[in-house]
Each structure stands twice: as structure tokens, then as C-alpha cells.
Amino acid sequence: MTVTTESFTPPPTSCPSWCTLPAGHPWEHYYGLGATRYHSRKVWTGAAQRVEVLTQEVAYSATDVRTLGPHLSLGDDHGYVPLTALEARELAAALVEAAAELEGIEGTL
Ligand SMILES: [Zn+2]
Image (cartoon, rainbow, N blue to C red; front, side, top):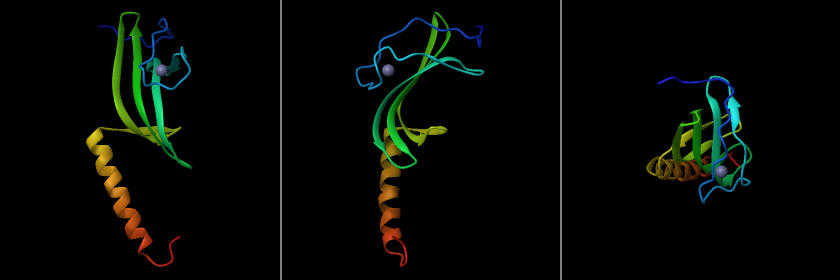
């Protein structure tokens, strides 16, 4: 198999039913990765982070389009960490526990 990193743009495909981005949102090109398209549903957006359901499609050629996900994503505009449902639940529990500890420390807001 040949992996193409040239500026190849595949024809538009339909979004998954849960994707909230505008219909027909375009493919993007990333150096060394090829045409990439993310499907997203934002679940929570904070000041610096967000949680979203995310699927990544990467087109290596017209007939070789690979999908990663869907998974939960914790991140920002500079990167993200993919999480399984179990990892997301564990992170949520850890954040609730850490928030309680923080509230118990004098001098914190
Ligand atoms: Zn989409």
C-alpha cells in the first residue's frame, strides 16, 4: 500500500447523524497526514478546554479513507486527548474528587 501525503481532496461524504458541524464541511490538509476531516459534537466548552464527541477521517487516496473513532475528546485548539467512555467516566470521577479536595483547602476560591 502506498501512503500519499500530497494535497489530495476526496469527494464530500455525508456526516454522521450526531455531527453538529455545517453540512458539507470541508476536508483540511495537514502536513504529513493528507486530507483530514473531523466530525464533532461539542458537549462542554470551558475557558480553555472542551469536551466533544469526535471522529477523524483521513483520506490517503480516493479508495483508502480511514476512520478513527468516534471517541470522546478532551482538548483545545492545539491538541486533544482521545478518551474511551470508561476513561471519560474515570476522569469525571477524578475531577469531582479533586474539586472537593480543592474546596477543602483554605485560601482557594
Ligand atoms: Zn461532520
